[in-house]
Image (tube, rainbow, N blue to C red):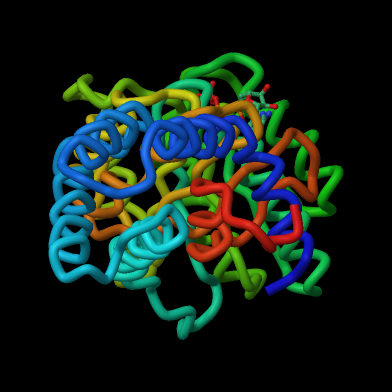
Length: 311
Ligand SMILES: Nc1nc2c(ncn2[C@@H]2O[C@H](COP(=O)(O)OP(=O)(O)OP(=O)(O)O)[C@@H](O)[C@H]2O)c(=O)[nH]1
Ligand SMILES: [Mg+2]
């Protein structure tokens, strides 16, 4: 695991970590042994870190069993147990195999302003640096300026953008043309940008389903990856977003963006727990290199404020 991931994830999670560490320290400054009251206080702390009721209950149950067995009696052991259970949750979601015939088609979905276009730009740049050929599709035909924004990222990354003129183009038609172009040019990756949409807008979710149907007409198992971008600063609404997009598109992965500005990174745990969809990347800033492959161990260490993680 690279230092960069530790460093960046650690920095990005500094707010969440501060919350947890200071909370745990406060919990233990008042007493030396773990009892029912400690677990009650911890429960409140975990809920406050956006881990949600189900995950918190699972963590507290795992801890009480360990406390009863006298396996956990101090802060260090308690953190180790928390870490083990959190990793269990984050690692159960299966990352889809990257075994495919090019082009690998990735569709980015999510509510407005979460960081879809930026994440595509960052990913395109990284793929290019790995000497992959990349095509982008401006299938956000709703917001004026969306295609332009993607083109700027395309220029930076050195990836061409398929787009239709005007703002009333059909996003499915753009996606269709982009898949044709990706097949004709034999590119390795096609990254498709979509318009931000509220998860509760039925017709917009139907539009996404249509896009997926249209894409699969040319490549039966495409889009191979359906990635939901979630803004880490959102808090509990992210769970509702994840559930609705999951229902409409059968997600294969999550990008957790804006972790750098968030004290709420913990929200991802109940999402992974309830959807069984893995986090693939985290966004930790606005520039090209600020998209980092998700590493559950580094993430949990950052969350818990563990020692010796290099940040
Ligand atoms: N700090 C920070 N800012 C980010 C990150 N990802 C995206 N942003 C910023 O968030 C804002 C919105 O990003 P976009 O990529 O335009 O979001 P979008 O989901 O495409 O938005 P719509 O297309 O309007 O739905 C921009 O100002 C980005 O620079 C991140 O990881 N960290
Ligand atoms: Mg966008």
